[in-house]
Image (tube, rainbow, N blue to C red):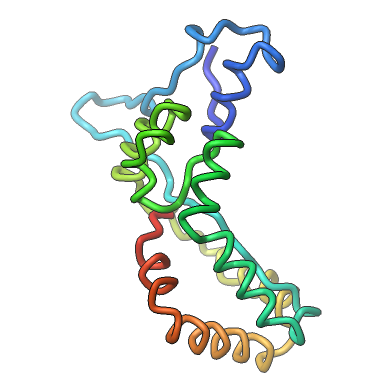
Length: 167
């Protein structure tokens, strides 16, 4: 069976409670190539947090939540309990993560070989539409950017963690 999906599916497919497949029937491999001389790669992605336009008066709480969810401790727990790959590269060195989440080794290789997704001529209008729903006017988007900068500038550790994100 071939399936192109997110890595958390390996945990579900290997779990007898959710799958009829045997654990040794499930594995991860690089995407196949037409020319063996080429290098396989995946599209770069990651976890995304967005702020609803109606949350303008709650930006401190929003950034507190984003910083909490981005912290190594939460990413580690999330990876161990949900079989989802973390976005922090340091967690790919964590022995418990590597032991409990066998897909992490393949995930690390995939992240090291990932490339940005191609830009479509439709990207700018789609992004404008999305941002229009997130921030109905330029002031909200500007306040978000300023609020993020001021929260991050004094956060030191959070700024370091943000630069460590791999996706």
